[in-house]
Length: 476
Image 1 (tube, one colour):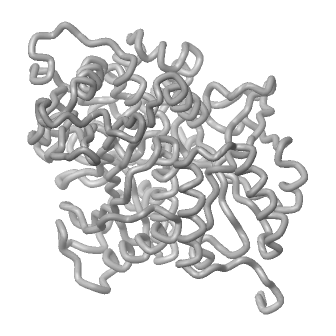
Image 2 (cartoon, rainbow, N blue to C red; image 1 turned 90 degrees about the vertical axis):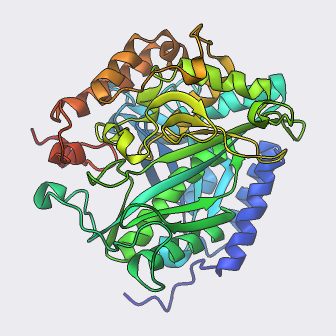
């Protein structure tokens, strides 16, 4: 179709970056929500070249959902948006399907038109129950509430940054076609830091990095990872809700760029046996009054007593929350000690097999790195469970807790058992949401072979929560 008569928003990358960084600063400065709302509605009203607003939210397993609202409709009806929650796995039953979407106007993004299409902007939504309260299975809302309470009560700002690994495979929809092909084909066999300029992997990384930069990610470094066709694109720290949003955007951007190249970006934790899997190392810290309270120049490894107490609570509850950090059958292939996998319930500055690493830091960068996180986990559940456990969890009376011979589960059934028996996960999620999440994981696991074996099984990919569609799920 001809586009010459259309005049839809398509901004240069430098202008996009300027707009997104300005919105990011509003979030960092905690500008009052009503003021941000006024700014956004005025912008949408004045900017005639915008045709639609894409509202994003995530289900209980972490799948990203998107609805496009006509701009004129949204301006008039933004406070009364409803959708059918019964169609979202882990949300409402069919008999009580109506849910509402509220706009989190501060989480507003301008995206490149050549990748996302012209005339659109993105905003994250908050799921609201029929009675007007935050919906219990919307973990983003829970995370935002918890972070807000911590700031109000203790003046804590919860910060996070993630190192998200992925694979780039030949062909589009390589995961959904796995039941036909039984394999994934690399686009590159170079390895760590090795990729020739202009090859598909390098082109993909460069393009993705450009999109991220335009969307205000504040990139740090990018490179091919250890395994063939594997990549990692790092970006800066952010407040915890923004950091979780950026994980969703990171994966969305990667998939979109790959699809436009006729390829597939995959975040399965272990799509290929015999090479390193995909991790999502989660770096966390807490600041108060602008100061990093994990930093202590006289502390062990320069980590403060507060920071070590945070670590001890995570080690205590590591098995309880493992299913929240490793949410799929495939994730337990990655927890293999032969591939630098963090399967030990330990804390160490150097041992990459430990669940928690204490990286070298300074007053600004001191942090705790949780290494046992898979990139297919719900990012809001990851952040919520790590921060709330680290702040409010118990500390076990285990001799030499930080170096005790204890291990994470090596299969999803053991992780499910730990999760269901744990009193702490009930406190974290409540009985209802805990039960829903456990049932979803059980259903996926029961469609797969109990023993992982030495090759990736078709159902392990087919019924993965980031891959399945309704047609695939209903194949028995």
